[in-house]
Image (cartoon, rainbow, N blue to C red; front, side):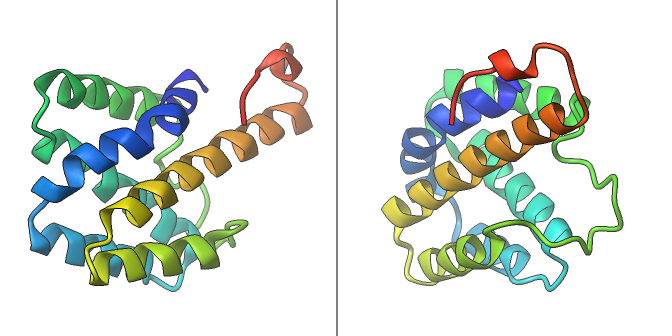
Length: 145
């Protein structure tokens, strides 16, 4: 949850600093990932490419290192793994994926950075809700989005 919370808070400025340095091919790959018909698979693939774009292209070494660690924490916490079939619907994904595709097509970095922030905020909120639903002790004390 902490990794998701940090991503939700920092993703917009970090993506905005990184995206101008991302090769056009990676933006195309990001757009294609957001176009996959299976929403859960599409979400996971899009998040993965977005985070890789930061660790490979951000001009700030400290940010690259922090995001490497956040990816490891996310993997450990099952945020990026497909535990279902990958075909499950994701709340709000239709609008988010459309925004990502549109942003990539015209290299609108501000819109793309903002969309990633919304994506991580939604992931944080849905993860917290899942913890509450399964009765994890202390989940109600988690603050944020």
